[in-house]
Amino acid sequence: MAPKRDKLEPELTACLKELHLPAVRECYGDEARRARSEGLSYEQYLLEIMQREREVRTENRIARHLRASKLPLEKTLDTFDQGRLGRKLKAHMKLLVEGTFLERCENVLAFGNPGSGKTHLLCAIGQELIYQGKRILFRPCNLLVQELLIAKRELELARALKRLARYDGIIIDDIGYVQQDRAEMEVLFTLLADRYERASIMITSNLPFSQWESIFKDPMTTAAAIDRLVHHSIILELNVPSYRLEAAKKKGMRGDANLS
Ligand code: ADP
Ligand code: MG
Image (tube, rainbow, N blue to C red; front, side, top):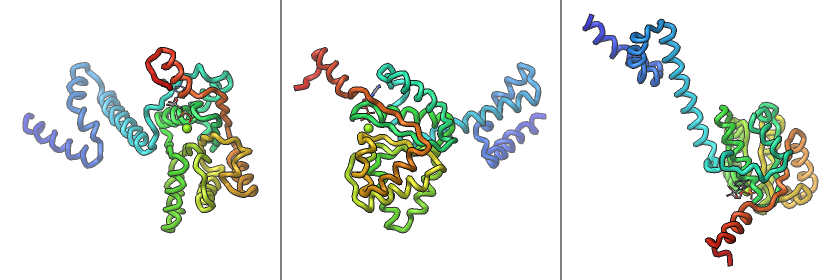
């Protein structure tokens, strides 16, 4: 019996390697000993090790998606003070975290003054959605536009859009913050049009729609862009004072910050 067992382990290991089942390879021996001592059936043992493989794969996939998302990972729901939001916004947040808006290809548009928490809120929602298996990408608008422009110059725009289409949601942070020229506006519009009714876009902006002509330059393009974004969308108005300012004031009141 002993020599057989000697052969079994390297063969099994080779087999599991070839089949790409690293978690099974890691745990099958310990689990087999446990199964013997607890009198588990073959099926129960198989289930245990296959579940372990599935868990590890899910964890790895989520870790990969978190890295690929380029999200600032410190902006989480846990560190987001919801007490500052009104009832309506809190209800919206709960709904967004469920993620069904991604399946409906709805957009999320977060407006509010600087420091009101738009970026933190959308990033926190984005991170939650990744834990649920969705793919999210975070890009500051000006960087995204530059990346698209480079792709266009290299005649790779279609391929870049295809790569972006892999994401269930793209967070475009601070649209309109940096003035864009016509070429920049055009690639941004191309992206919005490409994703319209196909995949979600999540936008933060300090500018109300009435000032979006400064982004899209002419009234027609501005109307067309707003139309596509708003058609299926959830609009979040963060009419709250700047969190940065309030935090700084509180610090000042405690006397441990020099605000002068
Ligand atoms: P905006 O994008 O609206 O300019 P940010 O999301 O960047 O604002 O928020 C500014 C700073 O305040 C960030 O450091 C953010 O983490 C923090 N912040 C904003 N709102 C909240 C909140 N409700 N709870 C905790 N931190 C917040
Ligand atoms: Mg911001």
